[in-house]
Image (cartoon, rainbow, N blue to C red; front, top):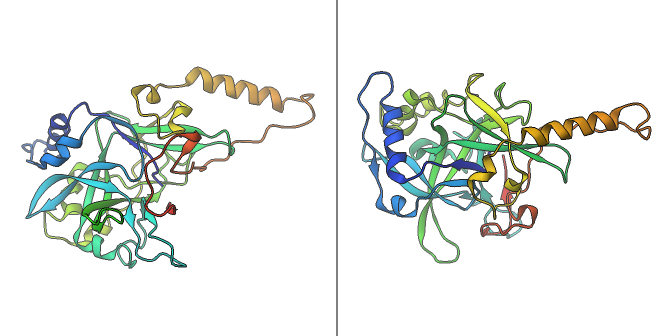
Length: 293
């Protein structure tokens, strides 16, 4: 799954230029992206992006690529027991093409969510540690997503929302979590968006697989990430010394004579709640119910 991610590009113009350059990789000229002024006005570097955040996404508009603002999280129309809509931050890639909640968006409103890393957690409850996964060679990640227009339950205004598609973990991510965002190669972006060759849903679905081994590098980072109230560059500082100290402490606790008990191995694949982590003030949730996939 993907519950938090980062995009620390310093300004919106640089982000557009980086996306254009990556789409023009392989000797082809850079391909233009139409930038929505509203997306530019709201952009700033972010180090702890959580569901309900407004974020720029790349989508097809009139046959062209456009970078537009969208709010993270679909509002599900299938809530149970009369409760409000569920916030769907992620959608499982397997079945997204046919499931009622996502099939319309899959057919006609696919998008790309730019990022430069994402977080996953490991360890026992109450002491989970975040790992930041980022491109091994630097640059951007292009996460496959879906968009849908939705009416804000409070203001009544219609805005664009997105969800991130997830798949089985690659070899890079599997030691920490069993799922990861679908990452698109530059040459796959136009097919996914439906800019090249039309909106071929069957061909687009074939792109939904784990990234090749070696695509991502992993870095243990500050547990301050656990609170969405924290959003600063220090979140990405590597905690190599702290990690080594924790490993030494665990080995000591597991040694014979250490109270007769062995330390429990951290449980891989653990994830933290999306909101109000560590007592931090999280973004507003439309209904208090969040689905994570």
